[in-house]
Image 1 (spheres, rainbow, N blue to C red):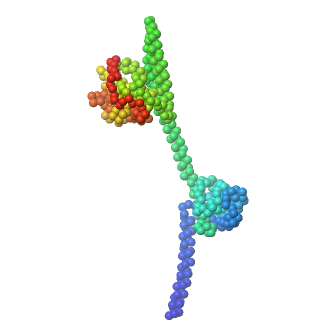
Image 2: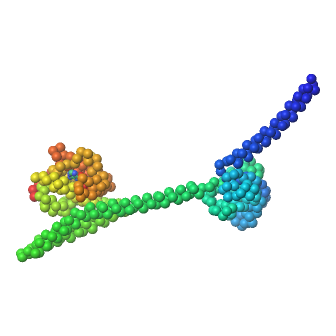
Image 3: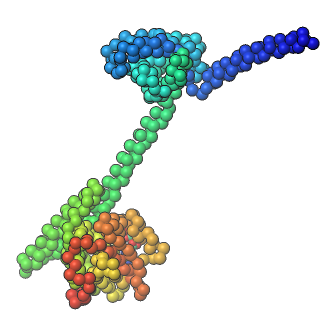
Length: 439
Ligand SMILES: Nc1ncnc2c1ncn2[C@@H]1O[C@H](COP(=O)(O)OP(=O)(O)O)[C@@H](O)[C@H]1O
Ligand SMILES: [Mg+2]
């Protein structure tokens, strides 16, 4: 019984010893498999020799390893020879364009062939006791190909086990390529954006200076007719010529302002009286209104507080709105043609400009689109006038809107905020300065 037991025990013992070694083998096998099939190129490196050198350097009081390695380049070269690669996986073989793993099991220096300075930084990280090191760099494969890679070193814990330092190298050339392509695409987009802005710029310049140019032509032609008459009227010709000059000046100012807007310059904001701006705008547009036999009335709110604004830009807004009304009325073929302009102050203290016309009004379906760039219902329209008005008014902190009047025709209005320090005499609107001018 005892013998049997002993025998059994002995058997059990020998069986368990066998089992331990077979578990060890199995675990080693698993470990190798893990390394082999890891989806990234991996090197197992024995860096104990360098560890010993570092211990001695530390004992001798070396702290700044980077400076030390700069002065002792030989140590970097030496490390490249004494640190050996002990294991590599399949991805490492193919990354280096090698024939087999054996070609990679040698001193580590070949990993740094394309970037010798990298060796120094890897050593410094080791010396400083860092857990890992990671850097984008390049390697030189055995067939001479340079490859962009992400180079990672994992230093062992505890640090004494320096025979199991791991290096992984990940090919990032595709990622970098993709990045480069994206950057190019981005540059192309920016360029396209700039060209589009230039296109819009050209369009808005063309749109805005159309009106002063037409005025110049009209005044020039009238002036020539006067000059051709027997009874020459110098006064009339002088007046026409000065209109030509002021319209030409205006055109040039408009171009300057539009260029400023494109360059994202802030508008030239000064404290201004909106009524004055409307009167100035009317100086330019009145000939158009006169020649089309439109009845214009103006109601200027008195005592309006001044607003902070760019005079020329606000003139542009008013002229654009009036040109639209003139065109709408003319196109509709109305027998009576009216435009009413009003300035006032609204309940929240903002200054308001309104223009009413008796044209056909805006089609219900178009109401939400009229401020879009390039939306136009006219054969020759560019569709940018209201978009410009909106960007100017928004840049002034105001609001602009268009709607239909209950009895036909359109009503456009914009508001401008009054700065806190403005010289409001009163918030009351007085219609005493009402003028009505049948033309
Ligand atoms: N006073 C108005 N009456 C009727 N429709 C208008 C009026 N003002 C603007 N619109 C509409 O808004 C559109 C856009 O105007 P705008 O941006 O100035 O471009 P464009 O004048 O070149 O058409 C016009 O085509 C028209 O349909
Ligand atoms: Mg227009």
